[in-house]
Length: 230
Ligand code: VGL
Ligand code: ZN
Image (tube, rainbow, N blue to C red; front, side, top):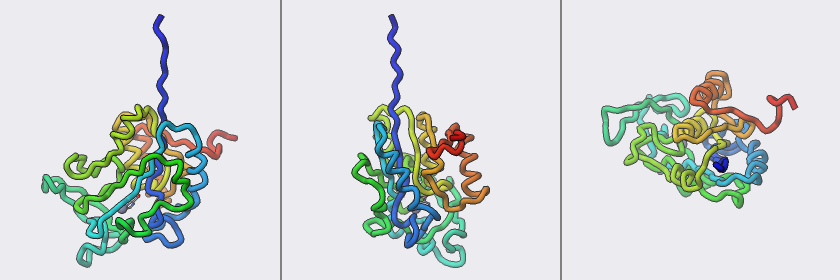
């Protein structure tokens, strides 16, 4: 008789829950960023097969820092620059400039102390190649392994991950791109709505990001029961 065997290896990813993304002092503080720590801590006590934190971890010369560009197109949060694939300069992407943030070795790059780091098994650093932006914790926008790829996909595959649950910061940037790449990697992917916060909470920011994620097959879930009518 054929045996039936359902594999369920869920992974929890906590994206960029770092000092520089949190009020009151973060260089690129996301409103309410620190508030999601308790709900993430409660998720970290659940029997996920794998629990991973990512860290935005930039060199000082990183291309996304407004301070590394000449005026007038160097306004943090506003200016959009064109970034070329270092290995194929005709391939380009437009990208937003930011205040200096999550510089390697600085306090702003630390995971916030409210996060129960003892329950995290892997910390994956990203954005370490100064030549490219890297919102996704899997790869940079050029998806060229020789440019910038993290070990995240390998960790998930070695754990035989089937489902990925994404939390953290910021909904409209690193959460969105990490979740979309998780879905592209073939994992059934969820974003926990009450465990994320965005840079731009408006319909054009987080609203559009949610639509992009849903279009990629990602399911938005929440723990507080609001949408379950509880
Ligand atoms: C992020 C902007 C710049 C993020 C990282 O973690 O969402 N946003 N770098
Ligand atoms: Zn960054």
